[in-house]
Image (cartoon, rainbow, N blue to C red):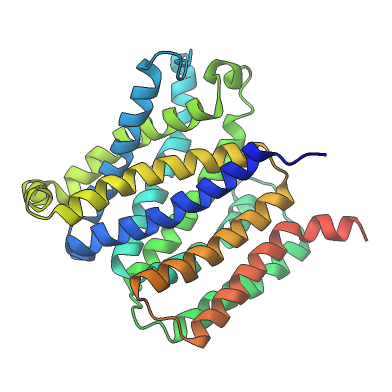
Amino acid sequence: MGLDFALLGYFFFWYLGNYYYNITNKLALKGSGGSKGFPMTIASLQLGVGVVYALFAWVAPDMRSIPALTMDDIVAMLPVAFCSMMAHCASVFALSAGAVSFGQIVKAAEPAFAAVLSQFVYGKPISQAKWLCLIPVIGGVIIASVKELDFAVSALVAACSANLFAAFKGNENKKLMETPGLKDRLGSVGNQFAITSLLAFLMSLPLMFATEGAKFGEFMEVLKTNPAVKSNFLLSGVYFYGYNELATMTIKKTNAITQSVANTAKRVIIIIGVALVLGEDLPFVKLLGSAICIGGVFLYSVIDSLLAKM
């Protein structure tokens, strides 16, 4: 068996894009005032940057065919798009209010939210072993928070909200993919992500103007007078769209265990790598909590498969 170089390329650029997204996103947020600046505006327009690329891909010759969706298909995709938009916006706010490493540690606890929703909302019970695996996941987040110098309640709440909407998105996406003929009408994984991003962007605009519309002129002035904010904002939008599309393509080509290993490794790289580049504090207690949390997430992902083989 030969190496799947295409898959290796997906992994490499997925990680690289995620890494640079977190750096450029944080620099854009920090340079424009952090949580008191324009986090919602930046989150919304980051989605817009991706939409520009998606539209270009559809009109460019021989690049990507336009999906043949019905109005019923569009309506069916609205819940996924809404949850995707809210998860992204909450994540951006969390990263504007606290350290990237702290936000990533809290976001690693997404399986806890997914488990509760699966059990009590979608009627799909999870095993007792999975419930037990949530103990180190939640415990790790608590330990990592003890010595968090940049801790903010708003960052914690926003990151937890991002987890909640991400968990909803995962469940809604599973329901969506059961729609007869939808995969054929979409045509490709890229089209699926492009349509979701387009709908998410349109949904984010009313929220953006409702929360920060009065400051939009001020935001445009910051872009004009601060080249660092402008460049990091635009790059973060490109990286966000690119790494998410690659992640979707990677997941389609791998199994559940491979995905778990990949996501675990990604969290470690982002938490340590970005913290070092941005000069964020990484005391031993924070690293210990991070390791416990991420280890619990990985165990949660594979525990049923391991027990089935015993």
